[in-house]
Every structure is written in structure tokens, then in C-alpha cells.
Amino acid sequence: MNIKQAKEEIKHTVSAYLAKDETGLYRIPSIRQRPILLIGPPGIGKTQIMEQIARECRIGLVSYTITHHTRQSAIGLPYIEKETYNGKTYSITEYTMSEIIASIYQK
Image (cartoon, rainbow, N blue to C red; front, top):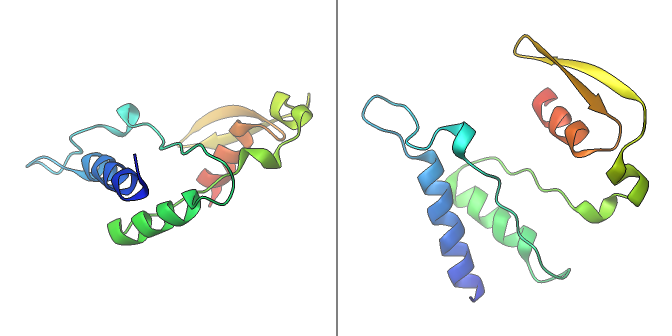
């Protein structure tokens, strides 16, 4: 698959996630939607492609590089915090994906 094909596939996915029915509800509920994960060597344009797609589709983009984590941080530290979202309390740990997701919700 070349870059142009990959970009079109991702745009089709984003369009499907944004599609609504005649009542205004998403055709694919957000609980059924999945993140788009791009894997590949550095410098091939993964982030650039996603920035272009986000701009063209007029959506926000959260870009995260897993290489910023050390092994210890990927496992998580023993310190646990409590955060509340939409009235429900969740436990989050330092330097784990849950902390990253929590910071996105806080923004």
C-alpha cells in the first residue's frame, strides 16, 4: 500500500466514524470506534499524513509517540491517583496510557 492509498483508507475510516443517521446519532457509536494506529520507522510521514487528514476532515488530532516511554513507565509506577470524569471516579497511574488518556479528557 502506498501513502496515497493509506491516506484514503484512513479518510474513509474517519468519515465512517463521523457519519450520522437521520436522527443525528452516530452510525458507529463511539464505544465501537477504535483509535487509528500507524506503525512504521521514523521519518516516513505518519504524523504528517494524520495532520493532513485531521485538517481536511476538520477533526482534532492526538498524536502520541510510544518511544517516549521507558520500560518502567510503560509498566507503570505504584503511585495511583483518582480522577473523576462524567461523575465516575477512575484510578490512574503515573506514566501509563491511562494517564495519557486522562490528560486528554482534562484538556
